[in-house]
Image (tube, rainbow, N blue to C red; front, top):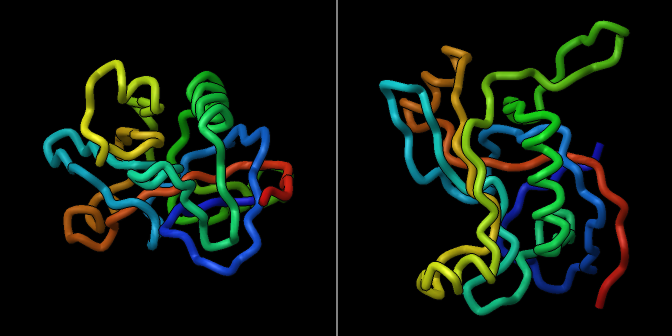
Length: 169
């Protein structure tokens, strides 16, 4: 499974676009990904950017693996994820599955999802500094993970999934 944790571009890397990225999970709280925006302690809710795909000037965000994701691909992936998965997992941690394979450790559920596209930003008259990306709210059910959130040890989100890489210039 290819995973993506979005961050500022690393110049000089070959850029690859991920196509057809239906995430199988939203991986919770990876370092170097966009920051968490809000934690609601009484409900154990965590809101943040699961993926930011463009800088305010419109240039694509390149991740640590040299990958970028297009807006249409992100919309498709987010919609597929919300229809079929909604699972929040911890930091790419794997646990033994029913058939001997390793599966992601679920720590919560994605309860809100909004893909902020360029068209949505224009329609809502949002400021240019508003990220283009996927904003989510997670209900963190795992007490140990929530304790880490409250203590400030978990400050960011990421997405995981499968994709086909395509070279772009």
